[in-house]
Length: 268
Length: 271
Ligand SMILES: Nc1ncnc2c1ncn2[C@@H]1O[C@H](COP(=O)(O)OP(=O)(O)OP(=O)(O)O)[C@@H](O)[C@H]1O
Ligand SMILES: [Mg+2]
Image: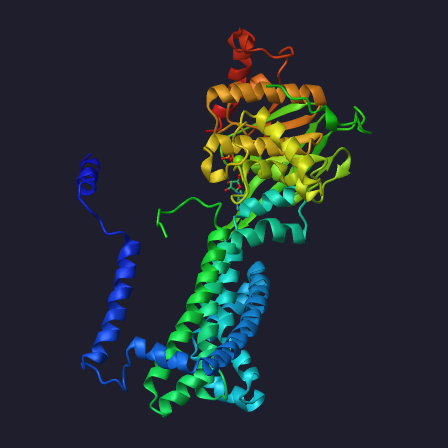
């Protein structure tokens, strides 16, 4: 009774800030602060250059940045293929059998918890400082969440659905395509999201540590030369890359969960 | 709201009258659990003649669902065997035997129509054909207009009706139904019961029907098998000698009441 009385009271408030509006407002405030702080002299410009300066100097050298961006993007794409393809496959195999789960899951979880960046120098020794070492490192870096999420998703499939499909005579492949994979998809996609972010981090960090091309390389190089606006432009480009990937995965997520009940009415 | 399933009418097949549609021989079943073994069923022998409508009643947990799973080839009994139309059951054979599960078990990412058509999809029936048939079946169970809803948009009883329609979709000669009407209101239950009887009569299906509803059991069945509490054993097989077709008026007769009472007294002693 008291609960129903409370609702109209809250509804009665005149205007309300939508969560989406608040989000954009915060972002705008942050950008404004970033622009104002160095210009007003609160922070030295060698440490923080205003976004307008970063964009201006970045676009002045756009050809340079564009080729680096394409290079990094290529590395990310190839690494994603490995991390998603191999990770999804391994996750399925591990998740489907109790034996696989017992044998492999603890191992995968511990590897995931390690700071894998320590093995990057070894990889440059094996594969050189070209794109191969980045792809190896980033694929490895991003593969674990994909494996774990896929294995978990496969495990959580409703047993009744499996029994039902078995009763209909579904063999291995139809069972996969019609029951297991659709049921595991939401969990898998959340793994793809984390894995995608880690792949991006992996590629950029590897480029920053040892390479001759790519956005990460440009960031490091400009930093050693104290070209702060260019450094920030590089950072902005990495943000754009990561944001684009995340948006694509959100799209996929929304497509894959269209059948599900609407949890809340978060209007995007 | 009647539907002719004649397009896929079952040929009377090689099943001879003297060969049981389902034969259960000496089934004993133990489940292995974390805390040791559970004896679920003990020495069940049961023979169902083709075309019979047989009810299976018994206290909760006595192994009715388990027995159905074994008949369907989904669970291998610890001891004993099952034969359907003379052939030993070792794996599911959906074209010979259909199952309607106790839980509706619908694919949540598929619409009602797609769920009903699912068995035909697995058999490679073209989309238009299988969905046309699924549409007719949804109409039959009173869900016209809900074809494109997903399971989460349906009530419990509606989901169960979708599952029933799916059970009919392949039109198998033997149908195992595990409390299919449990989630339904009385009126829908009676209507669907009549519809089930009509289909059964027209196509001479063999039906094994698990239920907790004694009125329903007497109304629908030729014979009611009463199982004891766990471990389930066959306590009695009660012949329901009411004439067919059954009518709702029969429920008020003394004979109906006596049959119902007879089953009830057997079950009550178990609790
Ligand atoms: N997979 C399983 N593992 C362990 N025990 C099980 C399993 N399935 C069923 N049992 C046990 O076997 C017994 C029979 O279960 P079953 O589901 O066949 O009963 P039921 O007669 O269908 O009951 P209800 O009328 O409540 O549906 C129960 O005691 C149950 O605990
Ligand atoms: Mg049961």
